[in-house]
Image (tube, rainbow, N blue to C red):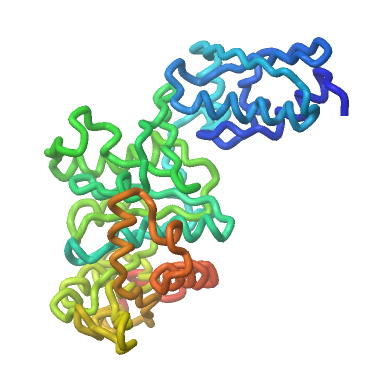
Length: 374
């Protein structure tokens, strides 16, 4: 294929913006293309001057031209969109009005609210690994870190670049193929700065994460809820009525008793409980192979049965994730277990859980509709 304006534009139509994930030709980022023998000039509009991924854009454009001719000498010149261009881009992506895309029953995104009765059960680590497992199955996935006070998703996922804001529209950060938004990105003081929000402010923060962030066409949205049954859990039920609850517990009986409440809340909020995850389950001894139950046993079944009895539904244990210190280590260094050790028993269990959740039909089965009978 010869170098020409037409062939280069065709090649650029395959180049996606790393944040927006739409072809750069489609979203008005290609300013100009010039060809003279083997010399190619491509002028690109960035959405904002401080775009953190401009080097990646240059790389993608250059590689696209090389696909046509390996000997091509490509020069990429960057410019910045005008205010009018950014407004047009915003309308192209989100439409003329701002709205919560996940509140409509017509929206096809499956929303899972990952809940726990208390902290320390590995809820955020499981959320991150489950999100990546879904992407490995070919799905478009987002994680909303709804734990406003205790946000930990950015560290677990290795997110370091702040989100780009275009005309008030926030582009979520991307790590391991997952789109992510968290309160950490909006704290000038970083991880040590506390968040002092009352209930209404928490609700507004969650609402803004849904309406002001451009999530794109997601197949799955995971909400990492704070522990307990407080303001955020109630706000999520109001803002995303179709969200399904996944309860995380450990095998320990005392932890299970606390976790039950985060599931039975669905009776008041009229949500579906998609199932229970038992984290830190028994692990084979590396020396003798005998199963070591470091945190007790039976917690997942206890939680599932108690929620089933309270809601009058059949809530199942989705997974029993064995204890693996690498799950914790991955959360500290930004390399989740399903990425660093996908063949480990814990990672396999998480991946199988993602597959099982995809097989669950959407609908009203098991949903408490709040209908009173005499």
